[in-house]
Image (cartoon, rainbow, N blue to C red; front, side):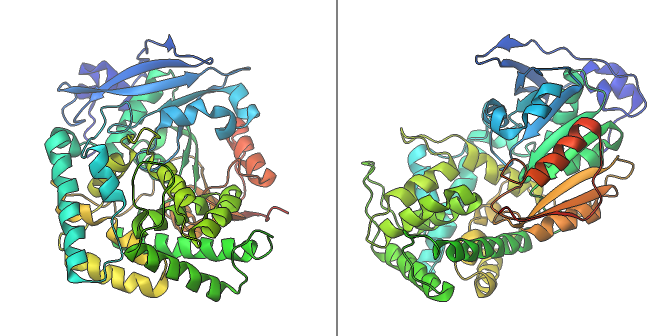
Length: 484
């Protein structure tokens, strides 16, 4: 897919910056004020990068100008895939340190297919409610059939509403967009912070454009070498580790609804999920949604992303054990970006579309069933839920392709940060990505929750800031201690 040639670049101004060895041409963005000190713009990019003079789509971009002596721009991506980089940049005060914001324009963007950037659409809000709330621990052939039919409807809905876009929302296309954006903001080399899926986007960028890298921080890394169902299984195990860490901490709190030990608490949670499967929990939000096993499981795993949300999870579980699922439902809504009015952003749809095109998923539902059964042995709470969640990819109208190797030869040092008890991107994924990248440098954090930068570790924050600002590369294998 490396199709760049000197002739092509000479013909297309926007693509000039994508060619190694050519003279950079700045492609000006038409910035306009969009409130609170931010400026917004649109960047036109090819729908199909192999047809650069063909149909264009627009990428929405936002910028917060540097408050001090400017080095350049830092592009940011919060992950997902499907999360809005526009909204992430609007929270720049919590996403980047003051020192970094002083020296860089903070530039956020919604990747293609996401948010305000030619979004993928598949289902109505009501159909999304049904899909998200599905029972993903099927106990009978009939329940498996429901999962299969719902997954087919998801895939066919995407084909009907976004068919022309689906083949072009993969990470490689987004990385090429990011290089055009780098040139458009006037930077000769990219400075970037990517979290979670954003690490995959950053790694693919470095692999495509190693000579255009200045400094990449990849925090909470994805391992691109794993086949998709193995990736699911590893993530499920990560949530199990995080649940155990939460329970151990819970036993020290006065409002913990469990007395311990972990095994007994787990049994109570398992019993709760089984009850919700047959008799949904109550919901005081007034929208009539039954809080069945699907919503309950989603509400359980959402606060595991952030240690600061553990008190809310204690409260939510205490209520749920008494039959009230309202707080768990609110937590689930946060993760799937369901708004109070019942509408959804397109995060869930974009997440599925990008994941399905980025990997070569099996096309036989029996493979998912076997993988779920196997995963439950190692991840009894979350194995089935995570594994069946990818089933629409079995019916996806566009065949996905896995990236077998990302090494970015020739790139300068790339900083990979991993949290030891990260639920969504297990620590071994950061180890794997750092070892695969030819210039990867691993920094570990003995912590809980998803990603490490600006989550409380002064050690991680200092290393990231020094690298971004001064290009001070930490020693590979540096470990930051547990907080407190």
